Length: 226
Image (cartoon, rainbow, N blue to C red; front, side):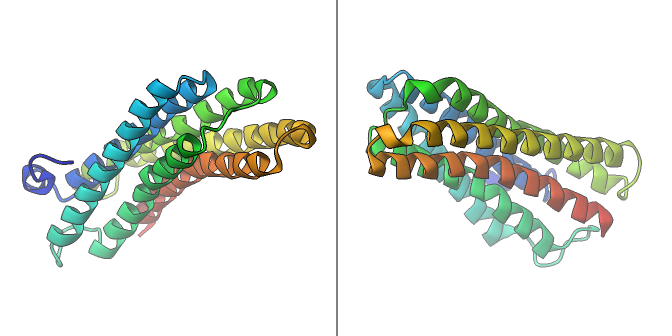
């Protein structure tokens, strides 16, 4: 939970600052998910419980910031960015902590044991997916300076380059997802069918984290193009 309203503290700097803060919390939630999934792979359920609770807490913090932004963002902005565009960017960012909470909830709730044959490729897959959120944070950190320069100059190049890297990270995540799914397919006949079904769901949700991060980057490019 947020102890002090985030919007009044940040709005004095820029209407963009609360949205940047929200993205930082979204990325932090994904980072805690990474630690949670490491505990799951080790079958350390006490540690996993603590980290799952942390994921839930951060997701709630992101929701609190989102709510304050929606309630307090001025209807008219004296900026080359519309309110609706900023809210659409916020909406996409918010999918990252939401799906992180879903992954933690389902995985811990079912005490999902990951087959040994899946662990190495799954670890790499998780790293790729969650690493994409860090790139999204870095790209978004340039947005306020980009607006100040009137969507020109070095900031445009920085964001454009960062979004290209985001595209690459999402592509690498897709390739690793195929690898993980192929490995699961090879052993699924030896596993409980219900467990297999939920494993595929978790694999898809992990991929969604990279997809949402890439979309955040694409929304930034959209703002530049406008």
